[in-house]
Length: 71
Length: 148
Image 1 (tube, rainbow over the protein chains, first blue to last red):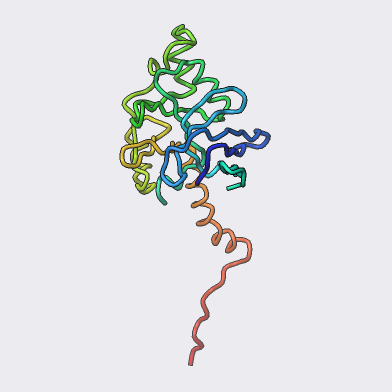
Image 2: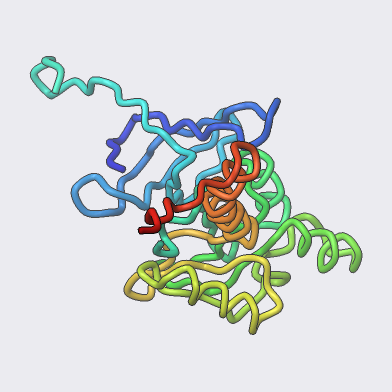
């Protein structure tokens, strides 16, 4: 799994009725955009190291370059 | 199957100087029941929701106590590329429900006993399927060569 700063990671609920959870990628510690990621959990402000498993998907966002064009 | 491929839940790690309250909130927020405690790149312990209750609340530790005060250490680990049979053996010989998976000595994920059971159940289901079909649809004998 690869991610970039600003991407959102969604962790699917593991049981019926369990809500999905999400966090924002603040820093990529692995090589070539790979894990681990430093993430912030929702609006709680808690930052942790995150090691994605098969329950996690990355929602990529277009990141603006310095000249204003999307990367 | 490799241990790393059997993980069904993402792993979450916190620093040892974070508080018990932080650990509980992060577990709730991320939906995991255990956190790896990582100091820099080094895996120094594991803290579970059970640890928070038995070693924290039951002993009256304040919520702002450091999480490394109630974590389990040293950590039972297995290499990411190890076979699941090896993981089963480690579970058998250690009274733990979670194994920290490492690669080159660094934490990369958490394998739970539940993960192993789910994989075992899937294997059993695959094995039972042909037998179930035989029970439902009857036994097909091999043709007997005609006697001369």
